[in-house]
Figure 1 (cartoon, rainbow, N blue to C red):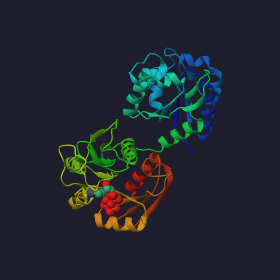
Figure 2: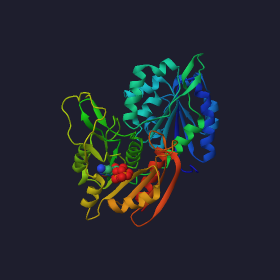
Figure 3: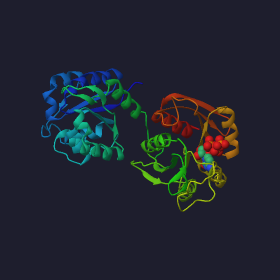
Figure 4: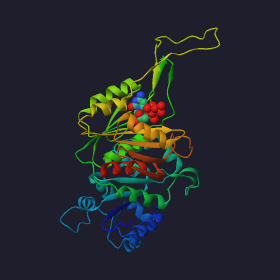
Length: 395
Ligand code: CTP
């Protein structure tokens, strides 16, 4: 992908991995992107301004008060750039940004930056595992900042553990992927469900399934990046920069969807809803009996997707379902899309261990109600999520 016309702002903080960022700047230059570089004063102990200036073919910014224009640099650099990547990101800079501290040019820009920001941390493994640092990372993630996890291996400080800067290719690819987003869903409300429902048997036991909730979460994140007002109804604990409604059972999920239905434009049911719940929930823990067999009576749950589709009579909403199959994927998917009456059905093969449940990857085929079909080859769930939304919007 050519990045012609894009401006990437690279923030370098004071860690030994700072020298690796020279290669990252070169990659962006080759792709056609304009690069602007801002460093913390400590970063200057590891790389020289002259090197960075030559590679980026631009002035390198360090000092807040080295003002050349009427507009302060922390505002103009933030305004001019399409994306910001902080690499290496030290524990100190991550923690300052998480708490709104703006005590140097880099942290001031980060504070004023309203577009996508990506952190590629690198530090000693004990610093990485420090609970205060981890709390700050969780806080930033919940606000939509992205993190490229450090790798495990030999560290410059002599330790061995998690803390090495991830590969330059990974940082580059993540920036390129994020630059593919445009505000296609501005003004729209997207409701997504995720996770497997939990159907209680008694106060200590339940029936559920292996759904990790990752695909639905990725779709909700993508919708948010495309500018949608996003709601995620999920059975999992999620901290995200959009509304999250935590539910447990299929009936609770149905109620939460009912609450959001009227105001929504797009509904995507990625949740694995239990088809049956226990008929007679026991308020007390069931005791073991002398019998060798125990028979649990189950009762059918409502088909939430089918009910929503039948409510969408005017057809002003787009409703999509997922279809997890262990055999005859496309035959079952075709049958399901007509039975449920949804606009799109996204089919994935759960018999494969490299994709689907719990995996970070997926490979799906999307069917539409008019007989159209498109396969999205194996990729990270984030990429598949963007591709699904773009396909739905285009159609
Ligand atoms: N679904 C739903 N309510 C249910 C069961 C499923 O809304 N009671 C939705 C799921 O969220 C998914 C789609 O229907 O979007 C297909 O789910 P799937 O489990 O593949 O199909 P089922 O209808 O449950 O059929 P089967 O289990 O026989 O494959």
